[in-house]
Length: 546
Image 1: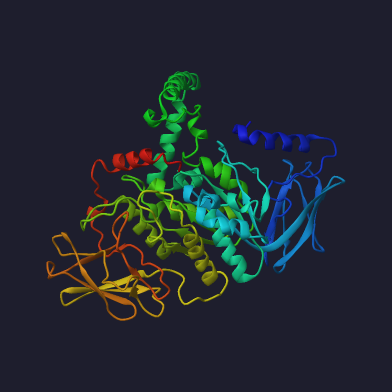
Image 2: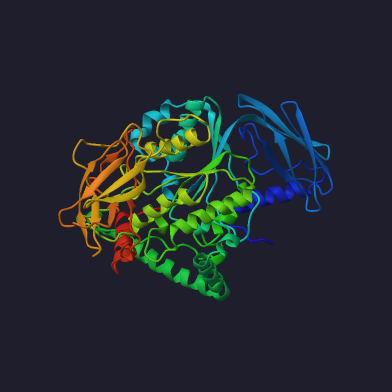
């Protein structure tokens, strides 16, 4: 029997009872339920379980299709949905003389939202969104939020219900997903449904199948290490260690409570019960099994993604390998080259003051920038102007969500806005002791956000010594970069820092330019030995709950 996490057992028992009872109705995954949104103008996939060998009939808006269950009781079919329709209809599924009805089914646009904590971040966590929470009542805007569960093997179902955008539910929605979907809904005037399946603090490889991870040397090593740990895992020893640590924590808790409030300090986090390595969230493939695979094949327009913080560390497998791997994996599982738009990491931590400072955060941002050039039907929302130095969870989620929506409106819905991204590096040309950088996505012309001279450009010669540069706009799509200390420049970087304070290059729409570098020198990947330790200390001091 496949191991299931405790949170999944109620759903599992329900399905078992339904599937084995005499004359039971057909069983569908939870996301095929009242309020569901089906992708318009497509053959929408619908599947479930019934008695082996039975014929299943699916009917929707005057159309009927049939399927026959296999020996395992599983069935799958597709149904032409037609144009967008904001009027709720009934979808029926019949088998073995029993019929179930799924009510208030809309036809519109469907997106999957995934990633880590900044995708999880809910509307209610930002006080500035209170009026939007209470003032938004859009029955054609709907969300399905998957719970945080783990599994050792790929699962076929996950709990959850569809909710409408309404004052009593808006606060619990992913803020990025909410603003993304709301903009599409209002601009297109059709229903939009978002399936959110995300978990804070988790690396990209946990959302990717192990089969895909085994195709790259770096990620295969992660899978090999996981199975090596699983092989030597001793549940009795792990439980004994947990009980010992729990007892020590409870003693510390008692002492902490006895102290005056102003002398307590920070209490250590309560120890978590042990889990098998193969069933531990964050490990390779675990969240793919439990939180992505259940939706594989659900007909949709595309996916939005906000993740990377957990991979911005020295020694991580390069993100321009791991994220494209996930994208290819998901597209293969869905059998669809759907659109995939992601958020570049926001500015974070104390601003750097010296040029040429190695930075794993900037390195990952730059690797993100390169992904659309190698992976079709992808795009990146640039948000290095929305972050907070002291918080890895910036409260501005409206800009990231709506900037993702700009990509969809331009690439999926033919809206053709003047720009749908901040300026993106195109090419560099050395000219008479300066470097001329040209950009894409400039609109009617580049400018400085604050009207001041351009900042955060760095320049270097053959000696690979970086200097702050003078930079000026040179035509609608170019910047000329130079420094007196570098008479023969060979390389330029822009916004190369976790927090490039002062970076002010924007396009005519006010969207910020992405970090970039024209070199491929290894110095960008050589970090101080204490870089990760310092980052960990900063996370602990904030009590991060990524």
